[in-house]
Image 1 (cartoon, rainbow, N blue to C red):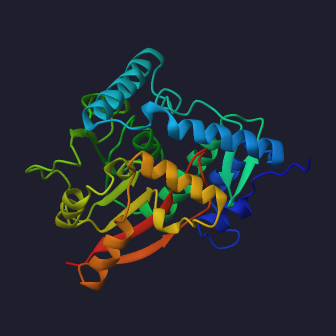
Image 2 (cartoon, rainbow, N blue to C red):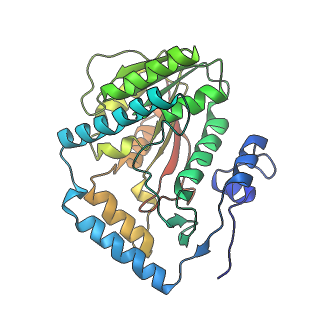
Length: 310
């Protein structure tokens, strides 16, 4: 089978950088990543589809809100304990659900790699691209749904003078954020925020940048409250890397499967349509939205960048 590697040109295309403008540190990350892969053959495709169908039929595919919160509290507590034991590092904050898999959705195809962590490795590089492109010159950056705070650590390394606000519905995430602020001697603050039940909270200074990474996916169609909260916070920019089901095509096998998975998990849906309606009403401006075609094992995220119009 013909082996290929993921290149800087691939990432320039995926995240819409002009030719030759990908930062050197991102190029180095790509060069040191074991990205060799081949397109899945017929036998591998059958294996992938069979495993996929078993997953979406499993009884644990759906969880109540309480079950979901408990699962994330447990997961981020494990990261917090690892942080205390092993020290501050991206590895300490790596979410436990990146268990490893030889399959990966990539460039609208299914690829196979001996690097079982290729999904996570490319996801990390994708975040560097997104942060570099959209968050430069941000004095304050707030992440909603910060989880293990790995993004917060990455941002603290990239933007050493920025104030960082980490918000999540778990208490463990707040502990991680506060520990990072203390141990790194950085302006990092943690806040408990349930995006499905917004109360009277006001911790985001006007003119901040707001980001969400794989966090809104948990909201399903229950995003009206948090969307209103973001608009009222008057950020200068909102950068979201989330599932956008509108970009899937039911005539494509991999997209059809991803749609079934996302809907079975009750993942984010109709969010982009809601933003477009707000834009038509003159309340926000959508700066950019596109699908990079860089996936996970089961589904993909797309980029939505927007800002409120004051």
